[in-house]
Amino acid sequence: MKLIYSPASPYVRKVLVTLKELGLEDKVEFVKVTTSVVDQSDVLAAANPLTRIPTLVMDNGKPLYDSRVITQYLVSLAPSCGFYPESGEARWDVLRLEATAEGMMDSAVNARYERGLRPAEKQWDDWVDGQMKKVHGALKALDGEAASFGDGINAGIIAVASACGYLDFRYGDMGWRESYPALAAWYAKFAERSSMKETQPPA
Ligand code: BEZ
Image (cartoon, rainbow, N blue to C red):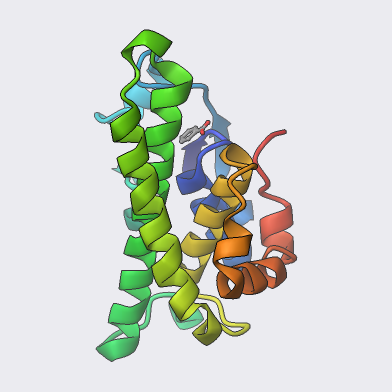
């Protein structure tokens, strides 16, 4: 299979951490692209009609996207890992956690695009503030759940770690650790895993 990726994306990091944790890296050809909404990669566009990273092209030539679909596919290759529990409350807990983390990434990335890509005179401050309010809403919810994460790992937890890592990458002066100490304490330990260290976004 082939992963079309860009290392700055938190969605990509989620897939990369999953690949490493499942020991599937050797089965993947990595194709790095540079892409944005206003300068879209032709390689990516040829594989994914939405031109979004990450895109995983399976060995049968068919593409998978978005990151949640890709991680479900990867977990299907290692079914005993339990990263997505089969059923019951545990399954919904993991899916909710993953959705919270992905929503946090969406808002953080949206605000970053507004500030980083849009001409200054066209930027909409209230919209950016609204996106960051959603980021704080997610952080608060995750802080309330972090004590239950323990030393465990699943698809939700990997998504949370990737979202926290993105805040450190793009919002380094935000100081989220002071306001959300339980999440910060859990993340400090999880970030020590080799899968996290080896997938740090570029400086
Ligand atoms: C970023 O550079 O912040 C970024 C890149 C790709 C996807 C999302 C965010």
